[in-house]
Amino acid sequence: MLSLLGLALLLLALVQTKWFKNYAADKATRYLSNELGVDVNIGEIELSYFDALKATDIYIADQKADTLIYVSELQTDYDLFSFTRDEIRLNDLRITGGNINIGLARGDTQLNIQFLTDYFKSPKKDKSSASSPALIFDKAEIIDTRFHYYNQNKVPPTSRAFDENNMIYSNINGHLHDFTIVKNAISFHIDNMSGT
Image (cartoon, rainbow, N blue to C red):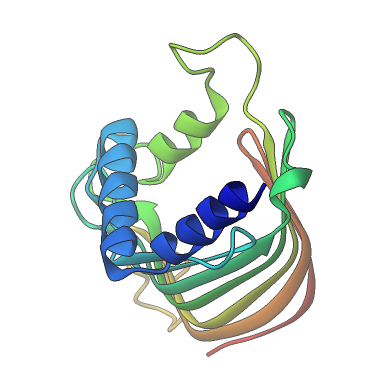
């Protein structure tokens, strides 16, 4: 029993080292890049006693190698024992310094995020036909995030200032709850949201 406790303490100490953080980020980066077929980078991953995760400098490119998603810092806490085959439930999610660019490049007929949507809704080749588990965040907080929607297939209007095909929202801050991703659907409740 004492050796099991010693092993657990050694493991906890190991996951706090700079080596492990770099190793975890490298493994996650390689796995996600391979799975998604686009450039994915993660600066550092930090686990805190197996109930919280912090990742920094998360970058996901679109299929044209442009920035799709960048997050300066992502934090979440969870109860590892609550994960089931059908549901991954995380208590809190905090996204700080995000930059999200969703749109249609000139000549494209699908949004640049479609490959990501397709990845999550399709059954995996090497797994059983069971569907992907739902991902649920009890609470989510967005801090200082930028969102850009664009459609380069449309000509900008000349008779008005508002261009529905090139919308940029900056300094987005807000609180959401019951944020759920199931296959290709996202649902959530907004408690408050602000931006410019």
